[in-house]
Amino acid sequence: MFHVKRFGTIDAKVLASRRSGPPLGLVRPAKAAVFLRLFWGRGWAAMSNDPEEPESGAGAAKPPQKSKAEDNPWYLLATLYGEPALEDSELRTKNRIAWNRYFAANLDDETREQLIEQKRHPAEDLTPLSAEELAEVGEAFVKRASSSATQVLPPFNIMINFSGVQFTNNVYFADYLFAGVTFFVDANFFGELNSYSGATFFGGTFFDRVIFSGNAHFHCANFCGGASFIYVTFLSGACFDGAIFPSAADFLNSTFSQYAGFRDATFCRYAAFHGATFSGQSFFNQTKFYGRVLFDGAKFHMRSSFVRVEMKEETSFENATFFGETRFTSAIFERTCSFVNAEMKGETFFDTMAFNMEPPKFFGAKLHQGTVWRGITWPPTPKGKDEAGVFVDAYACLKLEMDRLKKHEDELKFFSLELRSLRILRESKFRGSGIPIALYGIICDYGRSYIRPLIGLFVVAAIGALIFLPFKILSPWESLSLSFANTFNVFGFRKDYFDAATISNLPDLLKVLSAVQTILGTILLFLVGLGIRNRFRMK
Image (cartoon, rainbow, N blue to C red; front, side, top):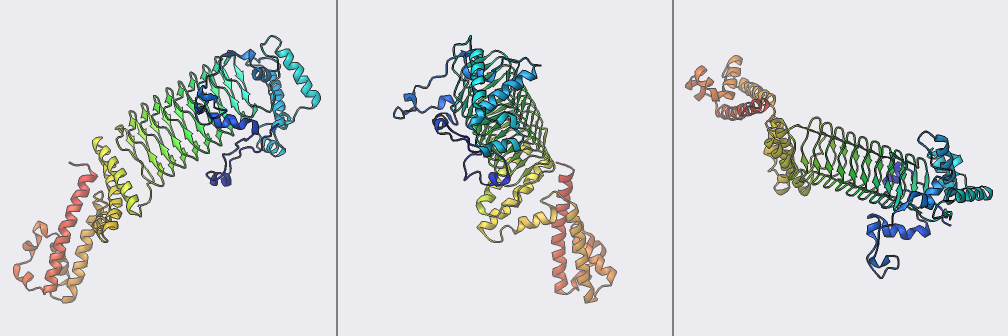
């Protein structure tokens, strides 16, 4: 007999140590360890091909044979008192309590208390059967299996196996307790409703190559030992809202034909959706990803929403295609984010997002003209040479893409971000070489402001007038006028209001000051014009 040692809870301490510790809630029963090693991460097809391994099957792994639900002992136990109709909640409850109490023998006291405390399952469901009650369950099972090919009550302390089962009716496994490694590999669900809402899966859970013809509900389910949904086909809606994945979750090459919902779901470790196809609307609103996330090669054919999603680790949408409207509004990317070779064919909203570590990489990507970049929180200015190089490349790529789309304001924004990083890169090579870029940013916000250089013109003129006054060569009014004439000398005002003799009689220091004012005035006037041109998008 094995016992489930821990139940996966999500708290700050556990998440902080997720890299060093074992997967959250991972069940390690002795008799089930071999199945985790054989199937984890790639499902049934990942069995080792090494003939030296006794568990490998000498590389001859075969998919399970198809069987009727009525011939599967675990299904008979799950529907011990009969298959309930949609409106028969009493029979569903009776079946659930019998199943949960039967497998509750695998739970230790600590796990049982946690399940009750977190209100995942009521205490009534987690009380192990007494000897008398167990005998009654055995009798009920024999009666239930009277017309079945199998009449042996499955042991409660081994893996649960629904592989290859053809479920022709609705499946009601909501709030069920799967207290071991569970297989649904190559199963087919033909009913209109398949409910696993609130279910708790200890150990690895494998739905590889399953076909759900009807709606699949995994609302608030907890996959404590990892979940594998590789090559799964959801022909109707798929709801994982509020689901918890304390260990790895793999949806490699799965197909979501209609609605796909992962609202408020929590992925504590690695999450893979690469190659997945979302034919209907998909929602990842307020989903939290604490591990690496892969959407490489995924296809989103309709509206997709990642509003307020939180990505704590590396995130990749490389080669993904978004055909409909896509929203990343208020999303948070704590680390790197890659959209390399991705294509946005519909309006895309990156408004009020936060990139806390690095700017996103869009090399080779194609964005839609309706791409919105408002209110973005960009990462702090890089400090080192290598980091600055990465920033410069990322911003330069986005600048060029905005130029292609004729989004002038966004182009200027990315140009300013590129220059900020370029200043750090140049400073790392030669001290002081980044000063011109820094001054350019201070004086005119990298060509985006005409107010700053305009103020600078008046400051230069005012300072010059204050320097002229102590020499008492000119009256206060004449000092101010000459200072302004020097600053705006490019317009020829000085020769119109001051004769050559007045200028030649100035001390050498004031002549130098006049020349400096003329130079500064010319530069600032140019920056004023540049700012006006950029501000009003004049070509």
